[in-house]
Image 1 (spheres, rainbow over the protein chains, first blue to last red):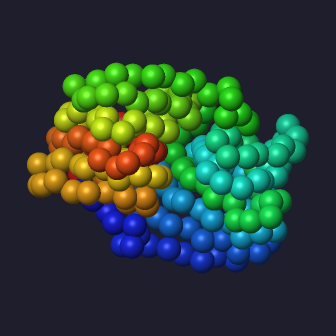
Image 2: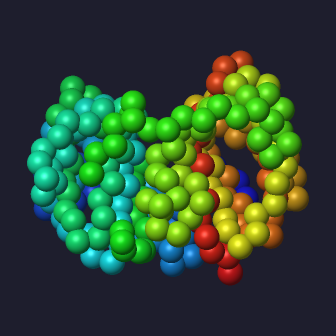
Length: 118
Length: 118
C-alpha cells in the first residue's frame, strides 16, 4: 500500500514531554498499522531552540535517527551532540531529551517499539 | 546510547532479492537491538537503475519511507511512482519491489517488523 506524503497526518506540538518550543510530527505509521508492536513511527521536525523534554521509557525502547541538523542529547550517562546520520538508542528504564542547538530545523525519525532491551 | 554515523555497519549488495544493480545498506539497529521485534532497521541507498527485486513478506511487514529520489514500486494491486516523503507499507502475505527510476540515488529507510497485519 502506498501512503502519499500529503495524506500523512501532521501534528504541531508545543512543549512535548516538558520540552520547550515547537515541533511537527508527521505520522509515517499509525499505532494500528504498527500492529501493537510499537507506539510511534514518525518524522519529527524540531524548530530552532526547541526540545523534546527529558522522559523515561518503560516497557518500550525508542530510536531517534537524525536526518538533518544538530542536537544536544541528555542521557543518564552524559550529554552528547548529535548530527545527521547519528542514532540515539534509548532502552526501557532509561531516559533522554533532545534539544535543537543548530541554526536551522532538526529533523529525525522517531520510532518507539514495545519491548525491553534485555 | 549514541551510535555514531561512522560506527554504523554498511553493506554493499548487488541484486538484492533478485533485483538489478547495487545498493548500500547502513544498519541503524541490529537484529539484537531490535529485541526480536524485527529483522531490519536500515537506511538504504539504491544506485540509479538499481532495484530491490519482487519479494513476499511472510509473518512480518515492511515499511519503506522514501527520503530522496524517485522510485517505481510494484505490488499486487499495481505499479506506482514514489517520491520523497511517501510511505510503502507491505503487510505479511503481500509482495513488493522497488526500482530507482530517477536521475540520482534513491534513499529510504527500510524497517521490517515481526507481526502480521491483521
